[in-house]
Image 1: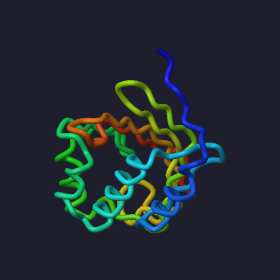
Image 2 (image 1 turned 135 degrees about the vertical axis):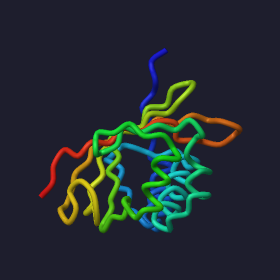
Image 3 (image 1 turned 90 degrees about the vertical axis):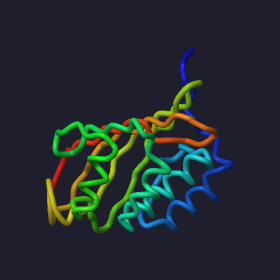
Length: 156
C-alpha cells in the first residue's frame, strides 16, 4: 500500500502555533500539515532537549531509537542522551523546516531540514543546514520516534 502524504490544512494553524511556541521553531512547507499528536510529540521533544531533560526525551524516543547523527556516527538512544548530558547538543536559532509527512499504516515518515547554529561539535558557531528523516511508530498508544537520519549539508 502506498503511504499518503498529509496535505489537509485544517490542523495547520493550531499545530504550527503550538510548535512555534516551543524552544525550536517549526515551519511546515505550504500544503504540509502536521498531525496534532505528532506535533505535540515534537513539542515535548524540543522542550526536553533544550532543558537537557533525559527523562522527557525518553518519553518521546523509543527504547530502540537509533540515529545516523550529523557526525556520521550511528548512535542508540542512551548514547545520544549521554551526548546531551555533555552539552554536545546545544544550538542557537534552531528551526525545523518540514517538507513531507507521509503516513503509512505502521509508521509516519517526516522529512525536511533543520537550520541552527551549533554551540559545539560539527559546524560549531556556523549556521548549519541539516536534512533529516524522522521515522515515528505508534507504540502503547503514543507516537515514539524510532529512527532519525540527520546529515550536515551546508555550514556557513
